[in-house]
Amino acid sequence: MQDHTYLTLLLNFNQVVANMTLSTLWRSNSSKLWKGSVRLWCSSSSSKNASSLSDDGSKEFLKEVKPFHKIPGPFALPFIGTIYLYLFGIYNFTRLHKDGFKKYKKYGPIVREEIIPGNSIVWIFDPNDMERVFLSENKLPQRRSHLAVGVFRGERPDVYNTGGLLNMNGEEWWRLRREFQKGFSAPQAVRAYLPATSSMIDEFVATRLSFACPDFLSELARLSLQLTCLVAFDEKFDCFSAQEMKPDGRSSRLMEAALTANSWVLRLDNQMNIKNSYGYKTFESSMLYMESVAVELVKKKADLLASKSTLESNEDAVPSLLELYLSSPNLDYKDVVGMAVDLLLAGIDTTAYTASFALYHLARNERVQNLLRLEAKKLLPSPDVSVNADILANAPYARAVLKEVFRMNPISVGVGRVATEDLVLSGYKVPKGTNMVTQNQIACRLKENFPRPNEFIPERWVKGSPIEAKAHPYVVLPFGHGPRSCIARRLAEQHLLTLLLKVASRYQIIWDSEKPLDCVTLLINKPDQPVKFTFSRL
Ligand code: HEM
Image 1 (tube, rainbow, N blue to C red):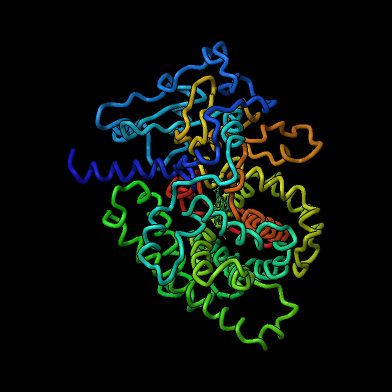
Image 2 (cartoon, rainbow, N blue to C red; image 1 turned 45 degrees about the vertical axis):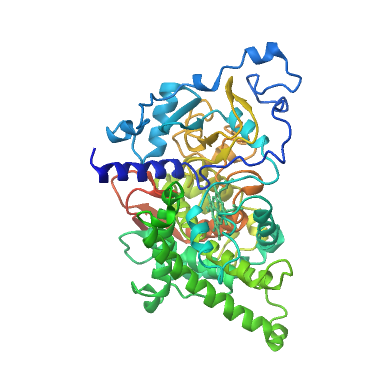
């Protein structure tokens, strides 16, 4: 095998591992927190199998547990593991959901794979096992991800204190998370941003839908950037101005930088020497650009806050996240710069991809689109009505549509964790420290979990509907689970619901491609073709 081919394969392997989730490989480093080496999992009422090792050391019980090495999975060759299967096209690095289906069909609900020899990953397809994994989490879930961000920031101690929220673990992660989630998690805090969000989306709907656009994804990414910057930095970026839309405009460069950095960050995660690895320079220059914008915005806001007169004149205004963070006694300037970069890194493509899939499913399902329109028109009888908390609380169908989008097209294949203790999953022992990746995207498309799994049927999520889903509570997890789940979930859902209601109330959405839309997994699940719509004014 030629060197460069092997390098590509290794890079791709890293991508496979990394792509399985936003938070790919998790380090089990929690022995101090979990003293017991085994723990009994009998709390799950939905569990089908005996699922844990018993604290009382019952020999009878242990006998039923099959050893780790017996977990079925693709055959690993010496030195090259299962990478040959990717090389020969049995599996495909960018179609992880298809790989997952093949593995599930061939090996069953739990699969062990050594893509690199000696480095087992367990793919988990059974929602009961997913439940066991998440119930075993402690207060400080560990994540081995965004290592390149840690390396980059470690080199720049004058700018950053730490690797930041995406990268840090343990108490240092919690110090940041505890403060940063204040503006994100409380429902009333997030709702405060709704009037500004609604008017920005109004402007977008009024001005951008009539353009014939070769790929509407870039429009949605611009909108996401604009919404994130408004809420986070109190800045109206004016992302759709002629200046900003030029390739060297600030918005265009930020979108490009976030996409590039994200595409490299997880591939770099598994390199022995990240700093000297292929791709690090590209990653670094993207990070430097995002940092320069973040530093400028934080400095501007800090200067404004330092001026008393500005504070007085803004008394009634909703404080931006930046303002909240800069006023926190538990955070310092460098913590805030780090978070500003994290928000730029995570706040653009996630929402834009989800919005693309949502508009696609609506376009392809006229019945659903009409029902959503009925609800939207009732709630928003004229275009100038601003979406508020009451409107969102009374939009059950829009919520059902969004949940069904997340079932069918989550942005992450699943959620990665490292076992924090010995577990028993599907009857096999999974030792503490094992890398596991839940396969929610695949589980959500299995008829064992949902009738007519490949059909877009929001009624599954409508209370009292004849086909209301009796879904397992751990099967649809688009924002992850537990203390380390997405910090911006409420905000992202608010943006998406507002967009769907506004678009559906005024436009018919038409899908302009022969081909159905699927996903490729880069960092997250991106639409696999240009997203082409016609929006026809009603
Ligand atoms: C539809 C939109 C989004 C989806 C589906 C999504 C999904 C996720 C997922 C699956 C995780 C990992 C959770 C886990 O491992 O349990 C995550 C983490 C995170 N997300 Fe999101 N996300 C979205 C939007 C956003 C936005 C708009 C921002 C920022 C403005 C953001 C910021 C973050 C951050 C900072 C983390 C790391 C949290 C931590 O480690 O404490 N996300 N997201």
